[in-house]
Structures are given as C-alpha cells and as structure tokens.
Image (cartoon, rainbow, N blue to C red; front, side, top):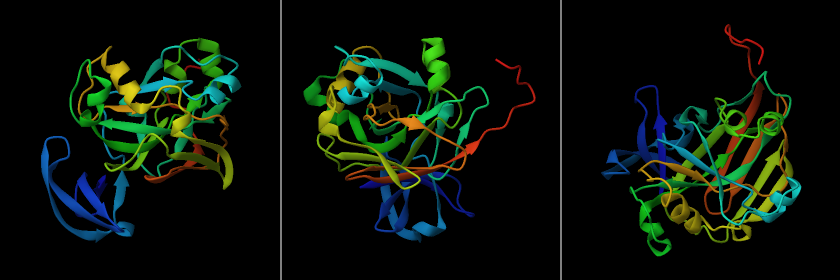
Length: 262
C-alpha cells in the first residue's frame, strides 16, 4: 500500500492512501489504527505533502563503499550517524533553497525508512515489525560548510534540506532495489541497496541500541557515489525501484533581515 499525506482546497492536511492515480482518505492514522475510505480524489487534483512529519531524522554517512571512496575515506566499521532537524523536511515538488552561507550545496539521493512502532534494542530479526514502510529522500548538504565545521549539523540542517516523498510504500523489498539520481535529466547516481555496507535492517537495529525509535521517525540510509553540486534552476529526480520517484526543483534562497554574515 502507498500511504500519502495530502490536502485539497476543501480538505486540511491528512493521511490517505493511493490506488493507481486516485487518493482516498484515511479515518485514523497509519501509526495507531485506521480505516481506508473510498478512493475518490484524482492525484492531479490534490497536493501531496511530505508523507510524514518526523519527530527526528537519523541519517547514515558513507554507507556505500564507492561514496566513501569519493569522499576520500574508508568504509566505516560501524555506522556513522548524524541528524537533521524536522524543519528541514519538504514535500514533493517543493524547492530546495540554496542558502547564502554556502557556495557548494550538493544532492544525495537516498532510501528512507519510516518507523511505525516504537522500539529500543530491536533485534535484527524483529526490525520489520517496527517499520511502517519506505520512502525517498534527498540528503541535501552544504559541502563547504561540512568540510569547514567538521561537525555536520549546520551543513545538513538548513530548511528545505530534506525533501521526502512522494509516499510511504509498505510493500517493499529494501535489500535489492535500484536507486538513481538525475539532475536536469542527466544520470548522476546509480546503485542497488544491496551495495550498502550496512543493510536497512542492520541500521534500525544499530540505531535503536542508541536511542528509542518512535513512530514516525525517519532514517536516511546513505547515498551512492556520484554526488555533485546544485545550482539555481536545477531539477533533481531521485527514483527507487519499487517506490517511485521524488522530483524537486532548486532555487536560490533569500537573505533574511537578521542575517549577520556568518
């Protein structure tokens, strides 16, 4: 099943489900019980939103060996974790804004895990029962800031730096799915999830040994090799076999009234 969040001119933001190109409302929440109502809203007449509003976004760095190489480092022995704030999330079609503080903003197409059931110390063989489904994300990164800071929070945490969607796919095999990223129609990234150093289930188990995973939390599982710089006017399309595609434009951000030049 494909779970969406959507709104129309008449309907406030809410959860729904997608069948072919028609959306139906949900009575309830996908995290605590629901009933599917009739699919009656054509997809082209609704606005799809980010499919979940996460409490936290846990990200994994250098989880594809070839990406570690292009970052001039070795594959990690244990997962490298960092976090993005929920305010970084935007939905399908919403633009990535290039912040004035950076001259090197880059794309990273990734598989996203959406947690459905709270868990701590989750054994690998019980991970699936804690996952609601999977989605597509772009881990946008201000690479120059990342390199300057050493710490990754500022480089990864700008508003709009986590496009997510277009839906949550509950029936998905995460162990051998093709991930591709196109910039303005040109292929830039391509790899299978089987190439990950740590599988999605290993990541959930590892992260839950550190922090409690709550319903609605999102885990970004790492990006393949082929990352590159974004420019004003670009269009990013990340596709994952078995889920769909997330399309995001890129625009130049504005300087706020309180910007103080750092």
